[in-house]
Length: 424
Image (cartoon, rainbow, N blue to C red; front, top):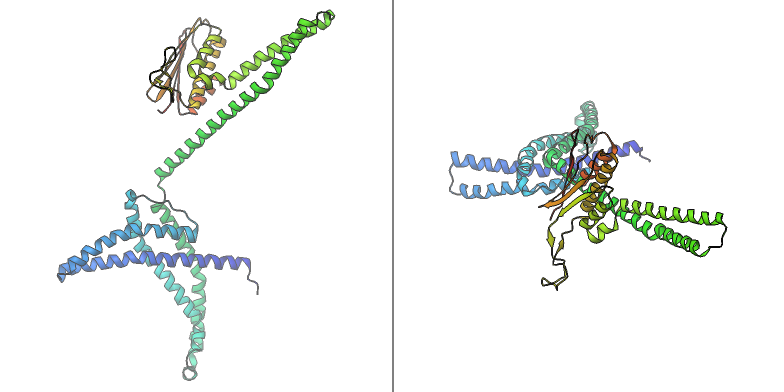
């Protein structure tokens, strides 16, 4: 005989619900019995004093405390194993929530669980009443011939009660899951804090992955296409120097190709520096910013004030001529953001700052904050919300939990201030 799939699923669900309710009744009944025991002992000390009652009461109260805290783990197992609901492991500091569920809510839920299980047993007994009748001696059936009609009524009532048990059990299970999640689950504030922590970690991972990908592209361009272009430019220069007997048209073609190759190398160098400059990894932020200031089309005053530290593995008494300390290195992502902020700011000053004759870049580290300030003496009027360049800078700064501020009144000067967190 094949059981229909819908009926099979209903039977499996009912079996799960009944097992969940029966296990909960056992766990909820223990605190109720302890409550009754403690109340009986307290009443006994008032109305019927007994010398042994304080001793038993001193034992029962710690037992009630242990039950209020220790039943949380079995409850977690019941929710997880029977309903697939994962409740967090609560710390001891959250004992109020555990006491509230095990000692207050549990004794209330056990009343509903007992009523449901009693209804189930009564329904099964009533639905099988005619079967029970056939188990009694035949003489009783002959003497009580009118049992068929009441037995039929009881059977119908039992079947109707059995039909009502699955939805009632499902509703009780959903109620217990709702209450369990509300009391033993993660609170709204804890859930938001955990969500913020997860998003922070995922964002940091995305930033690191993007930075690593830029480094990889920079290495591939430097070791691949750039080397091929340099080799091509050398060959063209060699051909230009040695093949002097070629027609003028061929000489012009070689000259043009040589110039194009050198221009392509220069553009590729700028592209590589824009992706991730190798000097930033090798020599640090101070050297990378010095290169930016040297290549800027207008005078740039650069001041980098970073704490210094003795390089690992070097003795304290270094020989003359060797640096006794080097600037402390920060996280690669922070250094990259600081570098690109200065690079983009100097580019914007050269392109858009009218009447600007000089720029000033100041980089200082104050505790766990790296502060970058870029200022120019142009006519001002820059709007951070008006172009994609400044918006991109602000987003890049926020990617490492930094702050971006800009002041550019009409008539100048313009000052951009960026603060980046860099834990020690």
